[in-house]
Amino acid sequence: MSAEVVLQTEPVGRRNEHLYFALRNPKVVIGLVVVLALLLLGLIGPFFLSDSPNEYVGPKSEAPSGEYWFGTTYFGQDVFTQFVHGLRSSYLVGALGGGIAFVIGLTIGFTAGYRGGMVDEVLNMITNVVLVLPALAVLIVISSYLEVRGVVSQAVIIGVFSWPWVARAVRAQTFTLRNRDYVDLARLTGKRSPQIIMREIMPNMASYLLMSMILLFGGAILFAAMLDFIGLGPSNAVSLGTMMQQSMAWSSLHLGMWWWFIPPGLAITLIVGALYITNVGLDEVFNPKLREM
Amino acid sequence: MGRYFRRKLLIYGLTFIIAVSINFAVPRLMPGDPVARMLTRNSVANLESSEAMRGYFNDLFGLDVPLWKQYLNYWAALFQGDLGVSVFAFPAPVSSVVADALPYTLALLLPSILLSWVVGNALGAMAARNKLLDNGALPIGYVLTAVPYMWLAILLAWVGGILLGWFPVAGGYSFALTPAFTWTFIADLFHHWFLPFLSLFVVALGGWAIGMRNLVIYELESDYSNYLQALGAPNRLVRRYAFRNAVLPQITGLALQLGVVVGGALVTEVVFAYPGLGSLLLNAINNQDFFLLQGILLFIVIGVLVFNFLADVVYVLVDPRTRLGLEGGQS
Image 1 (cartoon, rainbow over the protein chains, first blue to last red):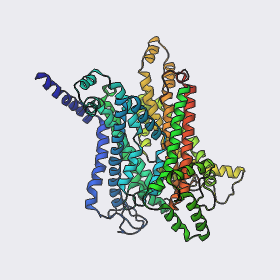
Image 2: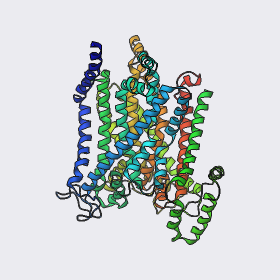
Image 3: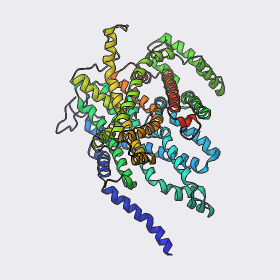
Image 4: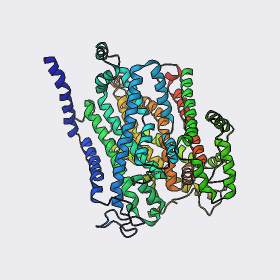
């Protein structure tokens, strides 16, 4: 009875400890505030602004003013409306693409590391092949063949090609954990492999998994921005990458319309940079050695 | 060592086969008819070339031949160096169009990759365990790794090209000049090359510096460093040993990072309209020139694989453990 109570309270206590340090770590707090603020803007903003960001609403090539916060494009579209919609699709691509890559990477990494033997050989080979394959070039070829491109399909193909480093790291960690006594014990009790992986092995690398999810999220956003910039963005939506593409296509550089190309790139830099800094902060939270005294 | 190389070569061979297979499969599996799209786009502009292309496509996609035979034909053509005919630069073959653009991309990529690796590693090693430098270098490094390649390129073009007017913002050389082996032309090439190079160099710098900093800190905490310090070895010596051990993962990292850097080079070239593979790729996409697109992908894959192999060779030269067949080289 008492042993059970201890078992139940232990992880809760540890989680609270992590939360305690996370909320007192300036890197985590600043990073999360930036990410969440932009997310909120992207989520709520479109409800207050026009539904169609490509609408011609104002004077052409207007500098930022009280009415048009980020100015207008060469055609008189409101840059701020586009920006807010772009934020939304960037987060969507990040969450979906990063999520898919995360699931694939985890599945392959755990299976390879836990099973070992022939399964591991094959999966490891696949992982190494996808790792060497220049992802962006493959993504470009695939998405250029798609006649209708959407944010979701873009996220899916990004996810399918950006998982290998997660799989590799998960596999390596699973290798070191799979022969521990408590895993053997779980195996003796007759639990099935997926259950053992989920209940016994995964919690030991929860912190690492959280951090790799963050990196995948940021990576997917960067990938999507690059694809959009080459002109392979969603054909019916606005994204931060297509904004930059449009601004370059209509020579905003030479016209001096800095308000057109600065906000989208700055937003991506802020989101991804804040995610990285959160990641460093989390590292300190999970690894007491790194905490500043 | 033999096993190490055999394994690596197997992986690279498989990667090449898979890349070619993707090239083969994507046009055939995608919804819609890319050939028809390609033809309708060009039939209006140039009747003669369209006719020639229709014949060519029928020959190549030869729908009366079973799929496995199409696949074999594809490989056979590939080994004869036949990548198809470019639509956008008709009737030039894809291989020659790509070969024309390749030197520009290589001239951007090689110096920027190697220089940023060397400088980044040096900066990172200096920043490790150095409060003052660390506090400055680390945040800048993180911001740099988060910057999208094209945005930094746009910013540099805007500041260095438009606001200051120091550098041209488009092209590989001035239109007034004809390519020749003269000093004016070389100076002009360099003048156009500098901003794209700088942009690629700066973006990659941060990642290397951060990686090196973390690795050096890790090495400085290890037993041999503590032992050396306990013996009273000078700090410089301890750091030198830490650095030499920390460089090893960075060499592997260089090879792994390559795909990303190539992608960055492509978009950077698009920003500066630099006449390398990136601009070619943009043209291919805008003209729905699928042969050219696939040819570029193939060249990129081959380039990345060759470079990976070179990194493996360097790794073996630098790390004696792989040479002696001990633990070390990660496969």
